[in-house]
Length: 211
Image (cartoon, rainbow, N blue to C red; front, side, top):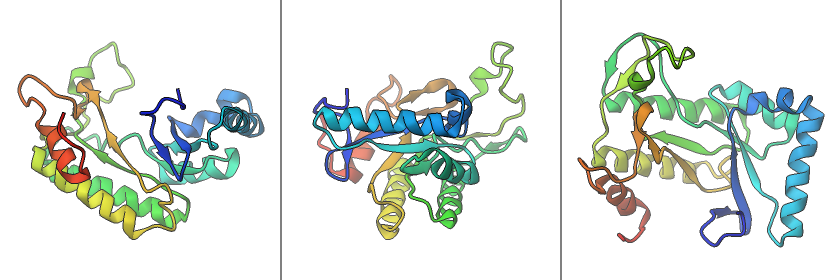
């Protein structure tokens, strides 16, 4: 899959690979040493396939755990899948979610570790507040839906912040949460109500041509 022409590469020919819940990598493989060996094997196989070694980003909701995963397992950088916010049963404006993302960027910056910034296109997991998902708090905060203009503004800020911090943002990339996490309130794919307005707003920032 890394060899597909549309697979994102960074730093030349290095496939960009996100590892979810990186704080659990060591227990999953049995130890930090075994997890490191697994990543090294993946890197070796990629090089043998004619690619650069994958740039593996440790995703964790806690900055200190992401930094620890880099030190213990050998991930290349850290980041987060998303920033879900607090659990006080509040509806909050999307601007507050933008602020939460930016707070996370700066907290991760304090660790000095390589980093990939994430922006939430939204967060509202009320559809998953059911007995089928007991791990979801019943009083989680949610955020009003972003307008395409707000999403574009937030992405523009993330790109600017990344370019202003090249010492930790070597990969020069940003992660957008998410393509189709409708049950969690984060999406950028076209919908019946919005059509492709979110993608068009992102394209206006990144220069991607409308298709």
